[in-house]
Image 1 (tube, rainbow, N blue to C red):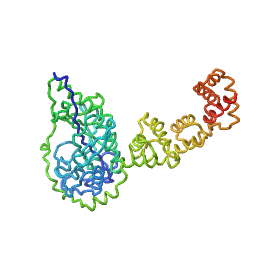
Image 2: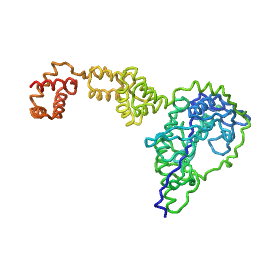
Image 3: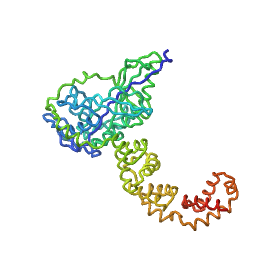
Image 4: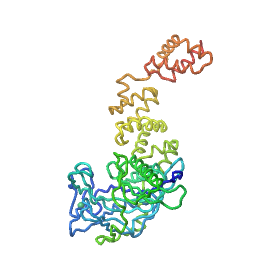
Length: 484
Ligand SMILES: [Zn+2]
């Protein structure tokens, strides 16, 4: 019916990030991940009758740090609210969250889509407690039984909600990466989606391109990687457009992304705020944040991704693109800077990290923190190239060995006899021999075909098993050919 119409998507995100405090938000239990089920619980986080929560000051500090970093406004007074719902992983039958008075409002995060900088506005940032975790015996819809682990109950979270400013799945994934980088740079969250300490839900609707009003939205949950966020949104947008094109309506509901089947499935009708019967939390006093405290936190704010990117361009002379890639995560930027301590040529260090190291790591789905090659080792390898001990070509083979074994470049080079031949006399003999054996390229070169030199250089490199110093070979060949 309306198949001629073009549609655009409108996306807003809700991001939950676990904060890296040592203890939980309202009790002294440890927040450590991966401990035995239910070993990190107490009467408070198990919701026993008669207990009282005590707010962890560090949680508020980390949330303030995040709000300042995105340019939000911190409320001088905020308070907690009870969000009432029943679920087996929530022993109190309510979650302590924030509702009408959040910790911070406003702010923005910049993303670059199609080479253009776009500003995504942030609506609010608030703090709340996490729920426990259900472990199903088998697939969720057919499980024989489910077990519950309360270790996660009361782990502090910040919830950040954006305005509906995103228009494509790529933008949504990009925003999420930028926000994660900010959290990691601030040291307030690990931001690992696969481990569940960073979670993202999306509100999605579609409307005819250029329309002012929003369409009916659905909420998509359960997207536990950047790739899944993008795929789930692509699918959901297609689904909604297909509905509208066939004259049907989009139903407001919560949908679950099934990564295996690559579809979103209806989970439940979308709750309205009143379904949760929010009311002010009577067990906690309102939070007062003094301007002096905000000021102190602001002054101690670490360098943020955008600042570090700028510094990489100015201090190391890196191209914008390289600086953006290398500051993508704090760990990667740290790796780069450590490497530069061992080898001063920053552009070369950047190239090797981006083309070689990240290539190897990406193929194995690994993170820079899991690199078997240390910054000192990579720096050492680059030094060997720089000093002419090995050629760039040999260096790639040495790097492969370093990556596979974690051994030092110097050891590999000496054990395998890979030291570059820079001895003029030794190379001269080989050059003469190659010239004798290749009369064709020789006469081509003399007839003015510059390209023929490449074949001759290649011949000498082969004869030296890749160990000849390429610059010296080039010089020697040109001398000989000019002299003949
Ligand atoms: Zn506890």
